[in-house]
Length: 192
Image 1 (tube, helix red, strand yellow):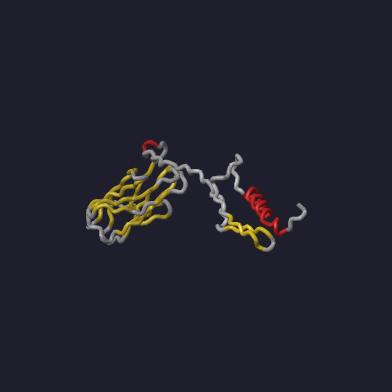
Image 2 (cartoon, helix red, strand yellow; image 1 turned 60 degrees about the vertical axis):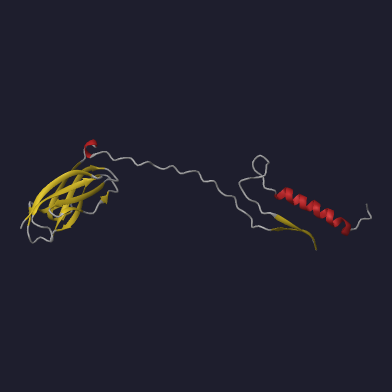
């Protein structure tokens, strides 16, 4: 066997190197079986190049695809009615203006020249996430204020300013709404 030249051994050596490379680089799963959750590039072999065997990849190396566990979703929990939450109370006032939670000039009659008024809703023992609004009902129909959702719970106040310049004379009801339910009302009259 000493009479064989390098040129005669080149192809058998190339085959051995290719098989060794295939065994080393073959993707494996946990049980010694080929991995099925990743794609491996398809190698192509170029034999006969100067310097021996060259492995080339005809596809870019693939990275494992992570498995994403499903994220649990929370079902919406209905907020109990105000009567179901002991301690909760609310009142609504029609005010000429407010200073914090103080009503300046509580209205029984809105003067004909008044351009606006403020609905002040004061509450106790509210819960984080409660949404408050004030709704004006009267001769022109129903006019909602701007809803506000509480970031924290406890005692506090909410207000909404209503434009009154175009309101016709008549009786009006101001309703405080918490999570879509009426929690307090007051009435006033628009003078003529």
